[in-house]
Length: 277
Picture 1 (cartoon, rainbow, N blue to C red):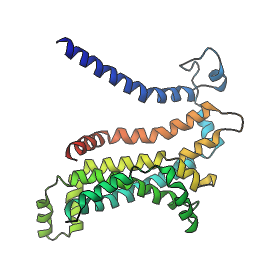
Picture 2: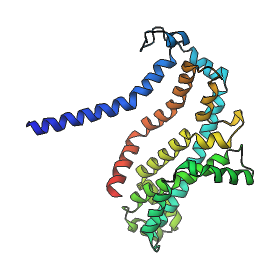
Picture 3: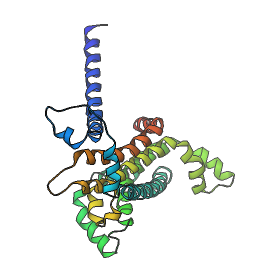
Picture 4: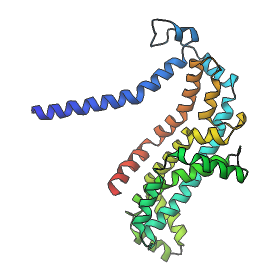
């Protein structure tokens, strides 16, 4: 192996190490903090690994605040917005790739541009709309915006898969009696499963992690989502970091499980979409 190849390999390994440390170190630090007592956390010198690991913080996370309600609210909001997003994005992507639409590339460019709008610029008009139609402190006040915000990216992801599926397959299905919509759901979506899973994961994670809209539109504690509910653990003059860390681990675990279960499909969808798109 020549010197240039060795340098390239070393740089790749270094970059991979940086990515791994950057991705895993904060989560590991939060996990270790959640297993410490308040006194151990404040002692000096710092103990990086808990000396006497305890699960009491997890128990208190569920008893001091209604963490189970926060989780349920997040599941309802993220799950409903993901289902709606995938359904609408599939129809939109199918229309963009199969129907003869004028200036199709322009429409896709507009979709991409819309997805880049900063959320903070939309918060005031969205709040006014939700107030006028009476949806504040209602799950729909989050489900509808989350769906709209995730639609552009999810539509583009699915379109990148749909355009590589031969229209002859749908034509054959329609000859056998399928309508165009039936051909979409029975032929195209199963063949584009990696893209569908990728879009669903992106929509779910975006809704699960979102904070600003959830803080603004839901003021009742019983309706708080997990990302906002965790902030209620802090006091006026104190931050119970072990308790907050335990709640954060509870918030991270569902997403980790979801990614682990569908890892192959998500990675396959992202890589294939990048090549096809």
